[in-house]
Length: 315
Image 1: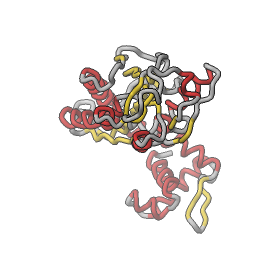
Image 2 (image 1 turned 30 degrees about the horizontal axis):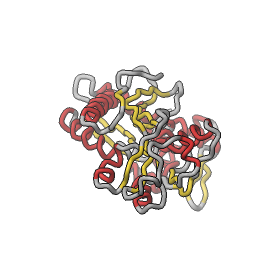
Image 3 (image 1 turned 30 degrees about the vertical axis):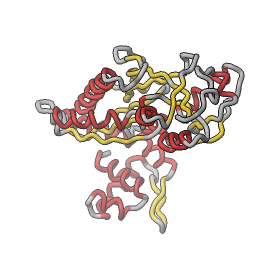
């Protein structure tokens, strides 16, 4: 079984077409078909259903896609490391960040990477921690910044910052419209605008409310913090979030942050990657840059009231 055969099969599976995959790989369609056939002969079973609209995966093909993507990427990492053992790190490093952190951290990481490791090509994806965790589990990203990540034997997780959460209310709201400070019990009647589960804040709020024997009063659901800021600013409700991502709106008076009486309303930003004996050189180099720039943001006060956890480790 050749690595090029696996790459060919993955390209066909992703595009759903031999012709589109051949264009992507820049090889003849007949050559591509032979590579996939060679794989099917190796495994002794069909990996693809061929039909008039293209191809679809068989059960065996589905299993191979789930495992082969990470294997191919790891082999490519090995090639980069072996070729670059006497030179500077190089290659593509795929990283993911949540929208509360990415806009501030990513530019600093890209700038330092360009200066120190110009042959590393960082790729950035941004989404909720739930989506990022799926990308990490499927091997689609190499480094992931996640809030309150799930623990497991397959990942190495390093805590970076513990940040308090606040009740975020309209800037022009009356002093008696929202309790100050706010207790967990107050979430039973306040008009909340929260992201859908399994967003880390939604899970945290529901868990703490359940522990207090109450049900949170969720009026609206919004997965976009940018949209949620506007909805709250219009006076349509309140939300739970950190101050770091809302600094401009808070400074301009569009929003107001109210502290909680419970210290349990906080989230932990962590850096995670697949557990392995040796990280690829490019990945470990970018990991070091991320840790350095998180420290710089912390010193600049990006996380008000936060705690620096970079020297702690969770396994």
